[in-house]
Length: 453
Image 1 (tube, rainbow, N blue to C red):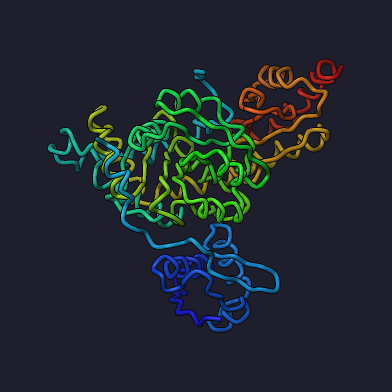
Image 2 (cartoon, one colour; image 1 turned 180 degrees about the vertical axis):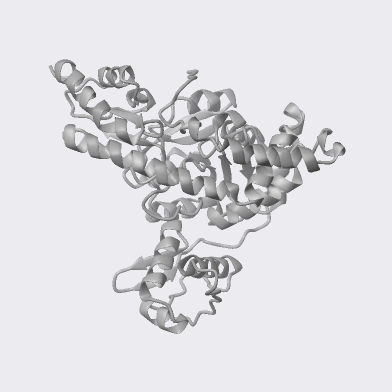
């Protein structure tokens, strides 16, 4: 076992998060080599004069992120394949040269948009921004926003990001399109099932999606390797539609697989059962491209997102963005930067996370009490639940009944490339706590006469 030098600021609080950050940094810097055995949680707790539970929480967080591996009887070790960032790979340096609109089950409650705080940031920006900043800017995004976002992603998503590796884009969809344009793969592996809105986007970008089966632990990495595809699109934080969070074991397998990963950081802000699991990009920043946005945390209409990738790829995406439309609106970028810098974004997320959890709990409780034959899954994170229906139920009829009651729902059948049980996705972000039980009761009444037979 290895003695560890862990610095703690006891006045700050959050000791488990501090321990996790110190160990994460040591692993990235190479001070803790792959295979190194860490002290038992009880021993490290005694060394640091903290409770054992604090150390256990830190270890569990790093196991979930893929930095550590813990086995009964063998202790906790640094995972293999987690390395410090390397020089960008050569191909990226040379690589430059069914419509669905309206209310979706994954949409946030837009009535909760923080209008007053956002307006305060807009006013600050308009009062202090020099006139020259309103000219054509850097197509990669204004420096202030990239600086704030880089700090946020390092702090909250355990990303290995610097401002120069970030490109501001018009949402995840544009970020993925630009990344694929730069990477230029002919075939792209995707999770099966996948969002029906993703496949047309990918084909428009010139790639053929190759479906790979997913299960309760995430994508099947052996099946992925068998496809021969060198690039994969993943939603490890919260898969759509099943809601599965990529397991620690599958995370390790993905890193060992060795291909390029496009990571859609989908629903990462809304993890209810524990702190958000760190992104894959933090494990292998030379091979993982992270795409995220504020579409769920604030509003889709802002069209503000980002791509974080290796230096060569980020430069190529930035160039492509400049050639496409000269970049994103600057006032909105400066506003988001101020929103992040003042802590307003963190406060907003804490408030909405509490409310969405209450709404999730109300809907799940009502479903389990009134529709016990329906299997409820994917509840650990995000803004939707995955409902697996009994075999003799008509998936589309259930969706239509739910929609007629004002519940946002979509059938899973059209999202599959291979057959599967009837299922649907149901959003809870716009279902107030007091409405959940009655909505499910009415759904049960309608289903009783329509779903059997």
